[in-house]
Length: 214
Image (tube, one colour):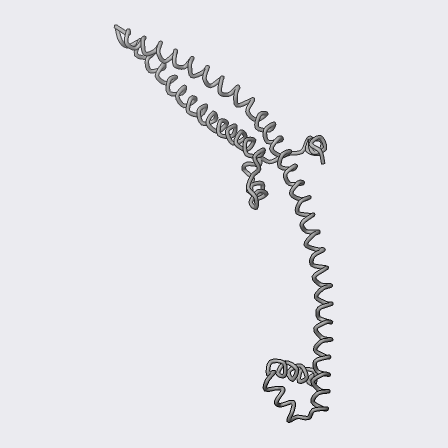
């Protein structure tokens, strides 16, 4: 399949975040991740880390804002009590300034957090496309190897059957030859032959015994 075919097949599908999916990582367990996959994976990981960092930062900024708001309340009370409220006034102004900076930072982080999910989805989609290309290439290669091995197995079975028949035929011929010489020459001569050719004689006798048992 071409990339455009994969794209049309994936459109509208809910794709899990691949780098968080152990099954996705296992796709590359045999040969490792190819060079075109690694940078996309790194980009996606960076986006996820950025998203996590921003979420944590917004949480901490909101805590800081709450604390600053408390300071403002305390300092406002102080200005009413103290005859000389210059110190409390300065603290009040500083807290207001920090709240404004904190609000601006929270707004900027939240704006970025609105955009990041779209970036994650886009990069994740590209990673899925490249992963599908990799998988189908691997499937094709594996299928070719499987076909070659299957053909080899068929040929080996044929050769095995042929060799079994050859082996059996030669065993029969050996038994017949040995029996013929035994009948013609007699046991005394054959005993001499057997001593000098012990390996052949034992082999023939064993085959004869196996045949008799059958």
